Image (cartoon, rainbow, N blue to C red; front, side):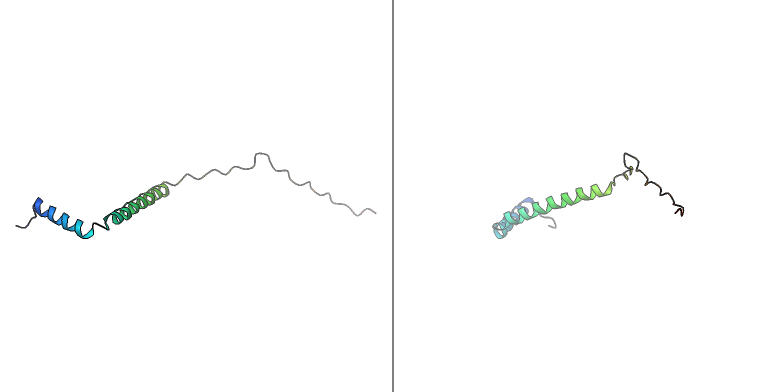
Length: 77
């Protein structure tokens, strides 16, 4: 007597449909949207969990020219 038979579950399902039948499509739509957002969030976490290896910083392709050294002028007048 403690467990419910299939007939009892069918009766409970019918009562739930009668009570919440008009709101059921909107509830299911909201549930589906929530699941999609959850999956997107989980994919974002997976992307963050696998960090990219650090990129190697390369210098410029051509060496930079050093400014010409200034010649010291001696006090010739």
